[in-house]
Amino acid sequence: MDISWWQLASFMIILVVPVGIERYFKLGLSKDMLSAVVRMLVQLVLVGVYLQYLFELNSLSVNLLWLLLMLLIGASAIVSKAKLSRKLLYLPVLAGLSLGLFPVLWLMIVYLLAPEPLYSAQYLIPAAGMLLGNCLSGNIVALQRLFGAFEDRKTEYEGSLALGATAYQAALPFVQSAMQQSFAPILASMATTGLVTLPGMMTGQILGGVDPLIAIKYQIVILVAIFVTLTVSVSSSLLLSIKTAITINGRVRQS
Image (cartoon, rainbow, N blue to C red; front, side, top):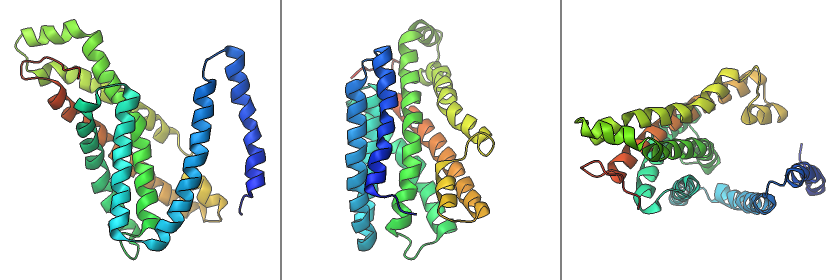
């Protein structure tokens, strides 16, 4: 069932609720809220129009370029939101996202979905988008926790170095803590899926008339794929960031 543009516009009226909450509590987020909503609308409409063209064109080179663009923007967003040095961490984060995305995406496309052709934009782009989109917040949390720990627990870190630990050994407790906090939301989500929450993809398929058991199979694939992509990308980003941001003598670079 299609949703008309006027129905969508009238539904948007419910945004007065978060606006009212923002005003009542004086959160100072009115500009951020307006910017986020406007950007979401413009970007989604433009992407929707572009994806129609992309699906019709279905070119291997164009699809790969679009994937590269998604990775570049994703890495940029992670470093920016984490408020860390782009010069130091952009490439480690980009590499971490790539290491997490491509093997899982290849398995999904080749082994499970098997579209014709394999690079079909209808499958490749949405699948990559779901995997990358769910990796953003996890990487942001992990990087913030890691580099926040270098400042908040500086004495502990320097004490380990003074006792003969390598930079990696001294930083390992911070890495472990960052991973634990980064993985906690998706673990909680997976543990409650089906009982507390019904994921968006499965709900969308059911609303579209797909058999619930088929929708559940797809949702299981997506959740497992997201979990694996997140764990690989976060762990890779953290380890590569340490190699880039920490000198041989253990000093943490800031820029």
